[in-house]
Structures are given as structure tokens and as C-alpha cells.
Image 1 (cartoon, rainbow, N blue to C red):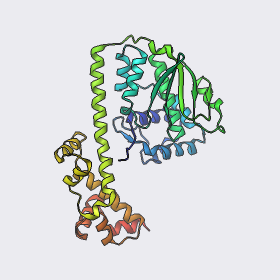
Image 2: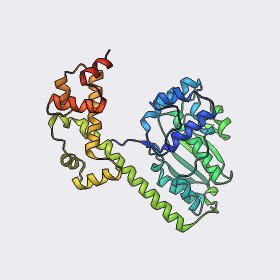
Image 3: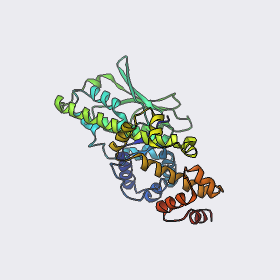
Length: 331
């Protein structure tokens, strides 16, 4: 099933702080992804799929073709998350980096980072996000974090980017203070491999065990959140029309025991009933607002047994009757 990429809420919170510092029109930029002009909740994980709209709006409103690069360098230093604690309690910078790669999904599963070494040069790869501004911001954030953790001893030798040559490498070099090469087949950060041996003054084996357990738990919760996407994909496959979509049948399609599915969803504070209702509401709104399907056909497509049951549910969701909602949306 298709994986839904997402980011920890701290990223959007830091982005907001940087944009405020730069005196950008945060109200307009955040409205592009239906968020208010206020600091986002750090604890709410966000779907990565909105990055295209967000950064497109940011570029248009700021009139800055390198807005992600500039926002990234204005972000506060990344602090207070389990990845930082893993870095601090690891024996060396290399061990801390290895654990960052292992648990990177805790922060974002939109990248798949890997580290290699050759001839005394370390190469960090996996920067291949389709949204350039988002990737620029992430690289800036990561390199600043490394420099902060190593008291500025960490220095980048060069950065390669899979961007068209029409862009200006000088823009990147002025911010990152290292050679930047465009037109490469992948994004990569190069640095002296000796830096991997830098000792961590805060290394603590017992704390490291605790922090790794915390990271494992967060990965497990993240995996459970993927269940919501998997269930919605099943509901979108036409199963609602068949009427065969109770929890036992959904669990069988997922290859799970119904009791296990219920427990997994309870871990992320939801239930199959909630997911089903939310999916039906989204589908109903879309069909009423954007199509000319008859009410009877919408009842069928959303899996309700009769129009009256659908109308009651829709009014409970929206406070409007289906016909009033359609009239207002299609006016």
C-alpha cells in the first residue's frame, strides 16, 4: 500500500518562526495549506504532501526564487527532540549520525538518508525530494544542527544538488559557505570522514538506552498512523459500494486479526469507526460539491443503506442537509 510521508510538527513550527523573523506574509503563506497565522502545534504531525502548495505560495508571495534556502538559514537551531538526545548521548559524532539515519522517520520519512565513506571523505545522500524549497530548507537545517552539536568543528566540503543548471550555484554558496554543484543525479553533502570520530562530551550509555527506546516507540506509533492511510486506500477501492466493509473484513484485507487492528488504532487514539466516518464525510463533501451525481448515487457510493441514513449522518457532520450543502458549494 502507498506510504504517506509526513513530518514532525517541529519543522512547521520552526518554519513559521523563521518566516516571522523575515517579516514574510505568514498569514497568506499558511493559508495556502489551510492553517491560521499562528505558530503551529509542535506535537501535530503534518502530511508531507502539502509541501508543494506551501512552498509555491511562499515563493510567489515573497518573490524569492530561493525562499527555502533563505528560510532554512533563519530557522532556530533544532532542539529538544529525541534525535538531539541520541546525538548527545552517543560516543561520537559518527555514532550520533548513524542513529539519526536509523530513526530519521521520527522527524520525517520524506527522505531516505544514507552514509558512505571513501578515501577519507564521508558522503551523506538521500536528498531527492521533489519540492526544491523544502529540500533546501532541510539541508540548511541539518547542516546547522551538525555545526551546533560539534561547536562549529563540522564543516561541509561541498554539496551536490539534482537541480537544473539554470539556477545559480552562487546563491547556495553564499548561504552554505562551501562549493555547490548543480545538475547532479542526487543530492549529497560531503565532509571530512575524520569528523565522524569526534567525541561527544555528553556521551552517556544508560541515557542512550533510554533515548533509543523512546525513538523505537515513536517509530512504532508512526507505523500505526500509516494504518489510517491503508484503511482509507481500502475504502477508496470500491468496497463501500459492496457493503462489505465492517472491521473484520478490513482487518482481513490488512492481514491482521480484528483484535490487533483495534488495539493498534487505540494506540494512536482512534478507531475504525472514526476513520470510516471521516472518510465518508470527505467523500460526501467531494461528490456533492464537485459532481452532478444524484443523491441516490452518492448514498450508494458512500456505502449507506438508504438516503435517510445518509442525510442524518451528513447533517451531523456539517450542520447542513446534503442538498443545501450542494447548492451552496455549486452556486
